[in-house]
Length: 261
Image 1: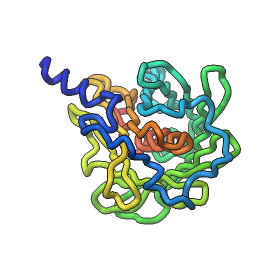
Image 2 (image 1 turned 135 degrees about the vertical axis):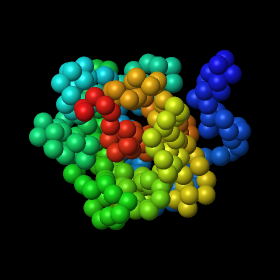
Image 3 (image 1 turned 45 degrees about the vertical axis):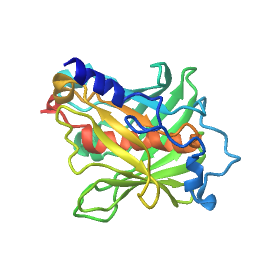
């Protein structure tokens, strides 16, 4: 049991480039793998107080007791923390009861992300779209505004018959990075990792992990825990898009529990 805990702790160590991977080349810069004409506009202000050297973002979904008692979907709320467990942001879903009831996890919504002073710094807009590996049309998409009112990027689902795939895009909807998940996302008694890759999918530069939180929490609640591992020198607007991508993955793959049965 002790060795298992040690391995789990090691796999989440934010000090390395990727948990469990060798130390990276000090000369490596992720920006060198992003075409210059596809970078975010440099004159855009950074999203809120997001630390520019942040390499691990922890997202903790709050347990909604009312939803558990009534067996209904309530608006999601998330705490966004740094590697020290300090809260830097708070995200609240804005959606109507009709959409949560009848559209369930496909519902359209807006996620407002505020800093500790209550100032809204990032807005994530999710329209109502399809979600099927058999239907390559009208797939999932998120729009990222940072600050609110200024679109800096998108997260777009890419059709694939076997694996869940997504693209991180700039404001012109040009692909910058790819997200590739496993063929099975149930995460039975273990973490689920979505790898962040370069456009050609040959190099992994980070990952979004859905952490296993125990049988009771995973099966009977929708309170999920995620970790976003990214290079420290990644542009802050790309990190904002990664936070939006994490929310989309939660809606698509992990918002199912016995609480609503």
